[in-house]
Amino acid sequence: IVVVLLLGIAENIRQVMMLYPEVAWIRGFQAEAHIPGSTLRRIRLLAPMAAMLGERRSGRLQLSATATRAVLDGISSRLEESRDLSRYLVGLLIFLGLLGTFWGLLETVQSIGGAIEGLDVTAAQSATLFDQLKQGLQAPLKGMGLSFSSSLFGLAGSLILGFLDLKAADRKSTRL
Image 1: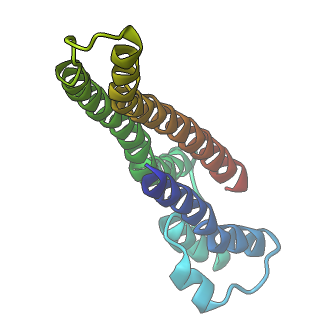
Image 2: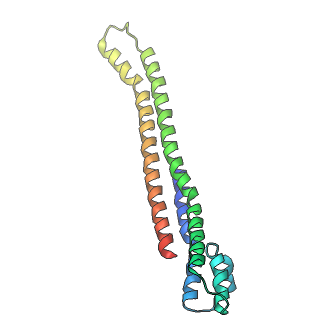
């Protein structure tokens, strides 16, 4: 669960970092500055727009409202596609939490059966029987701890990753 959470955090950071060349290109274009070829080669989301607007600098192209809308829709769909892995990891964290819950509950049920079988009801003293019961219930309690902690970590991880995904999407839309 922790590994998937760390992978998801790294993926969200990577998605935001990928926008820096795009933002640099937009700022350079707005400032009418010369845009180096290395920056043009690094942009991916805005590549179609860069090609169209590059022609505009030479005075040959004017973007219509429909062409602008089409380019912006393409950029929006590419941004949404880049979030697919992050959304998958959120679901994976929930699944791993549930898997740990069932695994812990399975261990609990098995160890309760072992605790009941280990009781010696022929013992004359009830204190001895109670001590045996306490020792036998330690394993089921560990299984319950595993099940609840894995659920908690899975859900907390999915909340963290979901929040980061929303913030990364917000950051992408405000940067572009």
